[in-house]
Amino acid sequence: MGAIERRSLKQRAARLFGQWGVFFKGFLDEPRMVGSIIPSSRFTIEKMLGPVKWDECKLFVEYGPGVGTFCQPVLDRLPRDGKLIVIDTNPLYIDYLKKHFRDSRFSAVHGSAADVEAIVEAHGHEHADYVLSGLPFSTLPDGVGPEIAAATYRVIRPGGAFLVYQFSAKARDYMARHFERIESGFEALNILPCQLFWGWKEPRD
Ligand SMILES: C[S@@+](CC[C@H](N)C(=O)[O-])C[C@H]1O[C@@H](n2cnc3c(N)ncnc32)[C@H](O)[C@@H]1O
Image 1: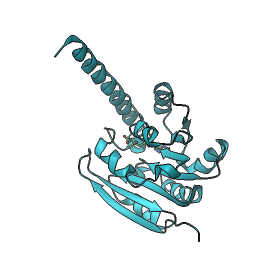
Image 2: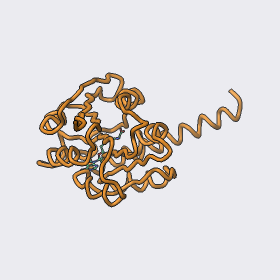
Image 3: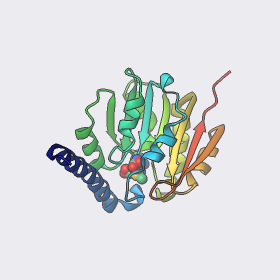
């Protein structure tokens, strides 16, 4: 291996551990809100984003981006006139994302997913096409999960979807109260293996 390749490998390792270090610090500060010590795997990302119709996506919203594991894959697929709004309660993660993602289509908001409707409106949109969630629904404070599922259903346009990955199936119960059709999947190549759900809001006739 040449000197340049060695340097680039070291830079990549430093970037990786830097990102994981920030994620782990966020976990130590708020274990129940973060719910995981390691970001999602690329296998989870690929599978979760698979059903999205990107050519119909003007606004993509993500809850609980952490250090942005999904952000670049979403930006890579999003149309040039699309927008990605990410919402996280942890200011450490929001500061990190604002520093590391300079794409003009990207906005990082410090706040709760429960306030998604006000956040979407404040950014000049009526609806989101897709909402992605990495929230640990089973350890969120009482009542927060159902409140987020209800607000998410209202904010998504007919024909759009709520994409959820989680270690437990808790989120599915909350989604089932609102979304007309739910598809399920599983990704073993993740720490820990996780459940995937796509909640579809049926198009209007
Ligand atoms: C499991 S981590 C997500 C990790 C990341 N998306 C990934 O794929 O690696 C859960 C995230 O949800 C955030 N969170 C918890 N409650 C929230 C809420 N009510 N609204 C927005 N974000 C929240 C936490 O701060 C944390 O960043």
